[in-house]
Length: 158
Image (cartoon, helix red, strand yellow):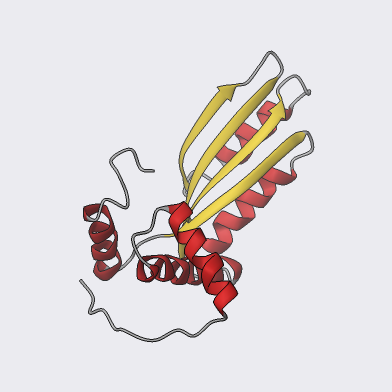
């Protein structure tokens, strides 16, 4: 595990009160754990925005499968991106609407391009992207293991 370094943080008292409420709602045991997660999130978000590094992303789209050619268009786009598609899930929501969930892994630029193309297909009613960094270092994995041991992450993943 990486060496922990202590440092001080100064902030307005009202902001600290709101932060403490936030960490209680999220189930953090202390401020340090919450700050570490926020720092990781900021670094991953910056990599995503700057299109650097490898990411894992989940793209979810809802569409009307009765719209002529739409299902084929979605499938064709996926078949041309097999190198970054990890998995897909198709759910029938009702008689007309489907949810397609696509898990992507690759360079941020490639993942973002495919995600945006899926979301931009005419006939997609709604969708979104959730992206995170790929843990590349042993220190990062040690941090994840430490969180799991502290029971911040339970076996159900919540």
